[in-house]
Length: 131
Image (cartoon, rainbow, N blue to C red; front, top):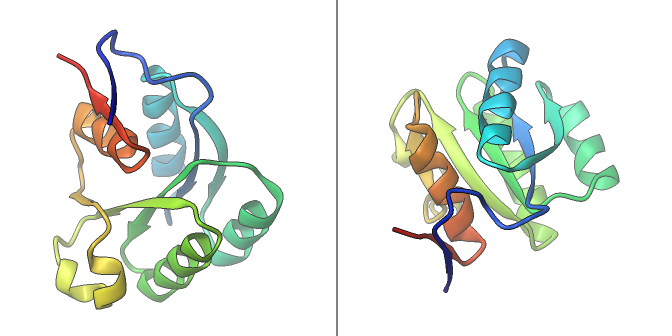
């Protein structure tokens, strides 16, 4: 596992954010940018998300599982088929609500600690947050 300790992720790690609320998606994107991530796109519906998945380059998708649970699951499966990484966020705390094939992927409860979210994103890419 690669590690770094200067508080900034390696250059050019890009994220796709799927969140039902545009305001929350924007806030999450701005927060993650402060950690050095690049935001490849924000989506609040499955149609937009699928379009971004096919058109944009990104390393990890941060997917909120909430009221749009089925759309989030379908999107996650689409992203995984392409060999990309995912991190789930949920306000409900029910990993049991995810199909078994998806439950093994990282999941954080909302509101997630920003440093923990950044660390989790890095860990799915094989990086460790340095001390």
